[in-house]
Image (cartoon, rainbow, N blue to C red; front, top):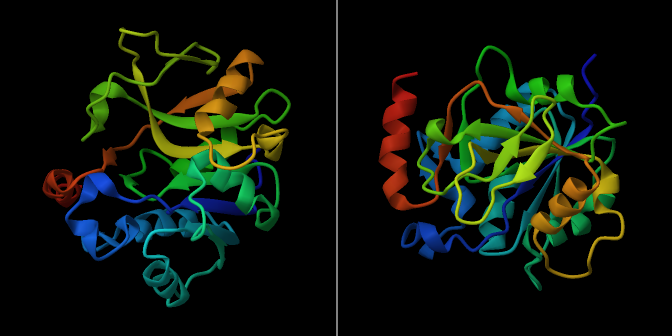
Length: 239
């Protein structure tokens, strides 16, 4: 039985430095790729999954992003987590937004990735595999060889049960994080104050044997720089 996902957060507060010069005049989530702003690709997927409330964090050129969100005609409500005064990074951003997020699990989505579904809706696929008794977080992963536009060495190893471990220094890991995950609010219990990375929470979950992954069956594109836009659009045009 699929877990019920009542709310989602879209991470949209970054400075977009790698996307310069396109981000000189607009926040990265509003850079257009394949006919629409990056953030709209994420919002489309969230809407298709039937989630009722979305929180978006804002910092850089926040007024433009808020205006774009205010003009949305969606089946879900949209709340803003305002980080104008202090950019809180990924972990701190989730902590600040948590009072606006309901349910367990909660969907967290980065706004600078685009994905296509495989045989089934990817968010519903995550919901189907969620097991709150065993998991504090369930990450959607893609094999490094299929991670279009991603130049790293991989992020995680995954055992047959889905349990995750980190890439060893100097080595290559087979799986890359797609920027899509389900979390339980307890992942944020006793979280650090102020800005911090989600990696701190993941490492804590790994140590407790409660960080799991699920392999993505569709396409995934890391749209991190201007040079990545044309190849992404070309690949999506072939779908």
